[in-house]
Length: 294
Image 1 (tube, rainbow, N blue to C red):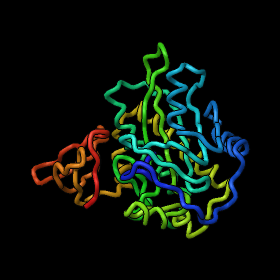
Image 2: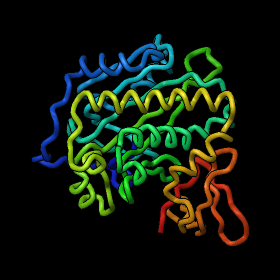
Image 3: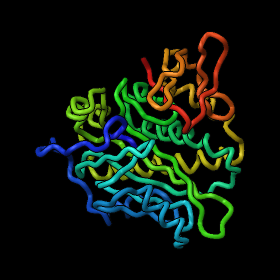
Image 4: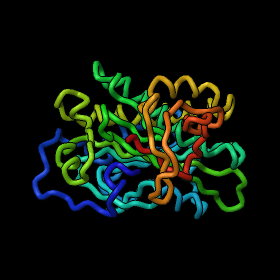
């Protein structure tokens, strides 16, 4: 989940974070989330852990009993991870971090599309809670969520197999900035957004946070089920409704090097970003390169 660490290995925490609404204690948070997710076999919430994605992947690989779907979240991560293994940390109350595990009966070739699908579904879920600000909440392919041009949330999709199992377990993890956008923007040298901006300066209280978590988790489950049944085709138009890059000139970057530039033109039937570089649309594959607006 690259909420903080897209361009730096680790960001030092400020000594005096801004005020936030009181947080529910971890057992109460877990109970409220679970009550909103009857289709989930388990909902866990921790005060602190290393990485919710890493916790889940380890449990799957060790063959521990954890029937899917299930959820694990925390108020603070000590070693959260974004794409390319970037590491970041946070204060409790700065961000909302959780991961969901799903059994996905799909061939390996179909798994990359789950990256943009996770972003589309999460963006739609957060828009439903954003009120009048919803239209400004969009997804930057493959799955970063933005408010305006500021990064609001990052998503990381990973897979693992239980011993003796052929079907992979997909783990979707997200980190949503709740506050401190101004400080983070200054530290990172790029625009960061948080949920207080979305909600007009109001910090999110405990029950609201439980609702946000449950809404995103439910949206992910529904999206995974739909994708398994219908493929990516239904998500092409859904992506268009939340696309932060549509019609914008972008750079296609690999290993820090700009390969080419062009206009973003939505996604194809496999969830790949289409970039018109002047000689036709070029499909950009998830996990191979990153795309940045100029």
